[in-house]
Every structure is written in C-alpha cells, then in structure tokens.
Figure 1 (cartoon, rainbow, N blue to C red):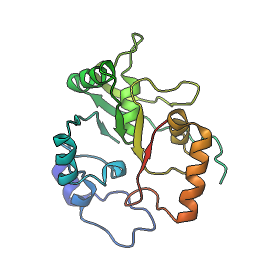
Figure 2 (figure 1 turned 90 degrees about the horizontal axis):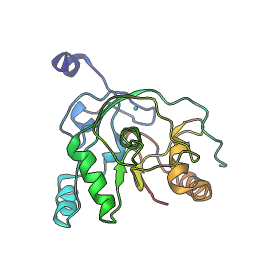
Figure 3 (figure 1 turned 120 degrees about the vertical axis):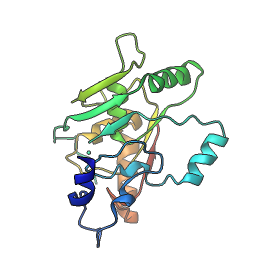
Length: 197
C-alpha cells in the first residue's frame, strides 16, 4: 500500500500553497512511520539541528504516533475520529516527566488527542493503540499535556476548544487577533504557535 500511495497519492494542499511540493516535504524530520494524508504541520519548524539541540539540552523526544488531520466562536465542527498509538515508552516518559515536575508539550493536536485518550482513571497515561473521537473542551481540561505546538484552526473547528482548554479563552482571543493583524498563515506551511497556560 505504501508503494502505491508513494506513486499515485497526493497530500492535501491548501489554496495558498501555489505549487505542489514533493511528498518528502510533508514528512517531519523526527517521524518514523509514513502514511499521513495531511502534513503534520505543527512539527514543520523542527530540523535535524533543532532536534539535536533539544536533545543536547536534556529534552526528551518521544512520539505518540498518529496517522490521520476576531472573537472566537466556540468550536462547532465535530472532531473527526483519528487513529492513534501511544507506545508504552511514551506513556512512561510522560508520567515520569510529570513525576519530576517537568512539562509535557505536545507537537500537534493529534498528539494531544492521543495522549489524553490514553489517560486512565488513575490519572496516568497508559499505552494505547486504537481510534479516538475525543473532543477536548475547557470543561474536560487536559491531564497528559501542559502545552502544545499547533497551527491556527478555523473558527468552527473543535480543536479551538482544545486550545482554550490549555491556554484559556482570553489569551486565545488575543493571540488570534494578533495573528490576523500580522497576517499569519494557517495549516500546511503556515506559522506554528506555542500554546501554554
């Protein structure tokens, strides 16, 4: 299947991207598994050099693997189910980071959904391999992540509720207003934002 997709497949391309890019441009440098229909854009800023510098500073790199996708109105579009996998090593690193008082910053909304789906009643992240239809809202909150890197989402996207769950609505509204004023790009080859409480 992967060979067929490499020959015949085309990634999702947003209107502001003027020309097609090679499929290799849609693969993040730290990815170990091929097969996404849409570029995981939150990881675009990472280069081999950035990853090496983070590791050299003692930052743990791990992956919750995912295969998938003005005033801010609350999200109205339902979240699409996504296939996610949280390996045992990832679950343990997330739990250890929290035990040691560290901060877990997810790279992208799919990783947030995967990790939050893997949180059990005991409050710990456990290995998980399956589908998630979890919608993260401010009322639900987050338990596995302390922040995330993400692009901006349309006003009707359910992911806005996730961003609000992490950052709070006032900060999110100010950030969106500023990004619109500054002409930030969304999606694919767009700008990436660090969202923290």
